[in-house]
Length: 249
Ligand SMILES: [Zn+2]
Ligand SMILES: [Zn+2]
Image 1: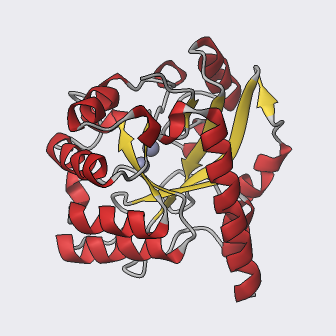
Image 2 (image 1 turned 120 degrees about the vertical axis):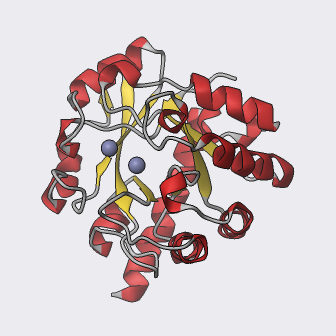
């Protein structure tokens, strides 16, 4: 399976990542990627950027090193209603809103409470991609998350960084495999993200690819096997967010 986009990457703006957007774009070009999602952490992450950073993403060119940049965020789910840590006008403008649970930023909950918060975030329509839903520090009920994603047309991420020895979110593998297997059964669209915090990890998908192939997920079910699929999905989602913002304001 060949992937043409990495929609989950961090730059030095995240406060705990080590490369610039320029370096990330160079790395993406070297790996043959066509699209790079710039998804620094939301402002509630300690050391994370102020919301002004996200407004300023529009100072970036559409293409850098020949790679299409997607101006996004990896927002924090901050309460049990599935709210995120950026204002709605900003969420309506960005080209990609990824969101998930993070230590310190998200409330500790039982699997039922976490599931309720994640389903609320999915159902809110402000989120395009739910990141690392297999995180064992924020257990969820996979069946309910997959059903909600199917119902609302939202994509779930299989996160490569969650699957490495010594990497982030140790103990994710079984949860990710269960989510991927449910996705394979139901035809849910998934996306593979590197979650790179260093340019050298941009486009690193090997462990996640192995897992989704084992689960029986087909290439046509994976968002980032095609640039057209990625751009169409994100444009459609952005229009939904913009309509939502207009109707709420
Ligand atoms: Zn991070
Ligand atoms: Zn994350």
